[in-house]
Length: 324
Image (cartoon, rainbow, N blue to C red):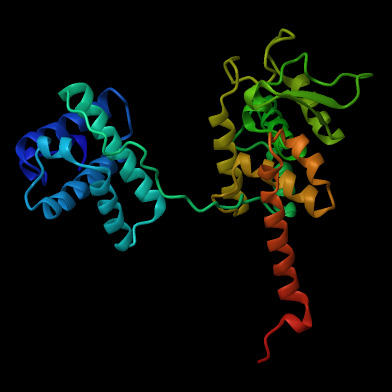
């Protein structure tokens, strides 16, 4: 059910509740500017909730019924959805949709309820980062230096330098794009970058000679003049480079190289950490290089490395193979 196809008489609720649902969806799409897909998904979630309440209460829910619901009623709905095989991510979205509807009722209809107070969503299973294998990561960096479709040399050099920073220094894309001319390592200062990461925390990051050379080549070709405090990476019109431009370049590269959709700019940062760890890098040092506030965040890469080692063992060790 989306904003454009919502019919009050089709919604599984009493007329006053159905009218409120239509108003809520309009507000989601217009005022909050949610995407049509998100608005439609929220509408489906509320529709499912009202279908449950119709059976649970013995009648289509009216606004007074919504106001009278308790946390037990909400939990009963979530329990039913779990038994129907709904995944945690979808359950979390359903809770978000119901919360949003209740906020609308409180603000626009002066209807308050404590049914959702203290209700927590299901724990989402933690997914491991998806790094790019070392040969593929090197192929990405090499391919980024090759002009395609008549690309301007300085633009090609720019993209190659940004991607080199992500893989060679483990930077977040926002960190790479915030590097100023003053930040660029200069002769006599050593190959060290001072990076300002999340929460305004700064860290020192070594710059590999190949990455420094890529930055230098880009700056030599850059047709725009820069002040010391300006970000070095610029768009074609001279403004600060947008992250989406690098994401599109990576999409093009992974298509050309036959890499999976998980091969994103951020995956190069994951690759930096994983490849260091697989070569015997110290976890604490990797934590500092990545700018992680907690070691537990960095430890996720040990799980990737353990999985890789187990795969190698099961593939290569004669005693690991099952008897035919």
